[in-house]
Image 1 (cartoon, rainbow, N blue to C red):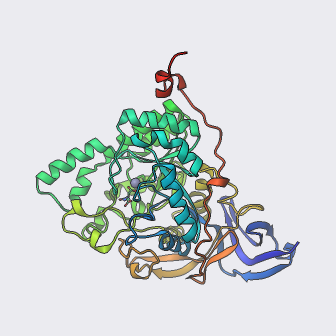
Image 2: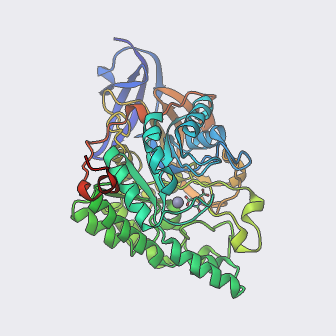
Image 3: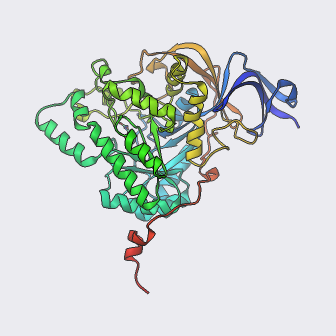
Length: 471
Ligand code: NCD
Ligand code: ZN
């Protein structure tokens, strides 16, 4: 059998180690991994001497703003940024305009994504008080999972109260899909923000004061209890505090299907950076005091936190540099810089490159039902590949990035370790650091997703059961 492409002389990284081997690709899939002499003949060969070959990163938390905010980002610019960042699959959040809340809106977003995406993707459906009834059409329309906003953030999606959240979890549990959570307590934040505003506080520190660590730990704890009761699968997004780790670990130990994510900004930035980039660093949950960093690193490396993702949240410069913090749009881009930042941490000896592959590709593929089709370089896996140069030094300049948002707290940051080539299903989407036109090549992964069977608990107490008409 003839392969389409054989990549020779690279170091192939898996969670178990690094091997010097060749990799053969045919029809978009990995055909074989092994000694160069064992490879089939190929139409094309590629020399990866000195480079590491990783399963492409799966970023389960991006905001590509399309439809709704084309000046911030769209599917083309967002997936271009991903491709240049070594990211081969993203999951897009539902806080677009209109929010991804029913089948019709979902179908429209699928059409946009399919026409513009350079890389593969999944779409989140919004889960909230007003979408309980549309869950079946969201499932039929093809979603990777649900997003539930426990706390308010950009886009002002209403946060369900605890009663509605329980019902949302009951409904989601029966689908088997995972629910990603923006886990911040809305009541506490709203009350504190109102008081802070009345007291005339309007700087970067006031944003943090409105969202102290208890906001996050309370929400994670409550979500874990509701998930345990209903059997809902939940994923705690953007873990930013040391305190969240206790309810996360305890719930895991009790067998709750709960997973966690953090982002580079909670590992590498702190309140020490506030004076340097006020407004620009504003994000929900906030970048916090430095003492949170080491516990989060520890949890990521010991596997308590499963996933490194980015919360890529692009905004325009004008929206990030207003003087009144309450009018600043929260979030900043990250999909393009996650891999260089984390490879820098590998170079610094924080973790091994196998650890990195576990948190950036293997774990997200596993928890979202895509493994081993995605997240692995095994025979039969999709040939989604990031080829990286661990020795390459680079300075992040926002102005040079693919994202339409040219403003982030990473501007000027030195990194060591850079993706050089990216392939999606066997096709180069970035070569020699240059995007190679693959607009429209990306495909939704919902069709290949295989979640384990749903495990519904306490069904007899669910809203649906207690309100069912008696026979
Ligand atoms: C996100 C955005 O801009 O959409 N902003 C943010 O500060 N993280 C919303 C979110 O993910 O919370
Ligand atoms: Zn969020």
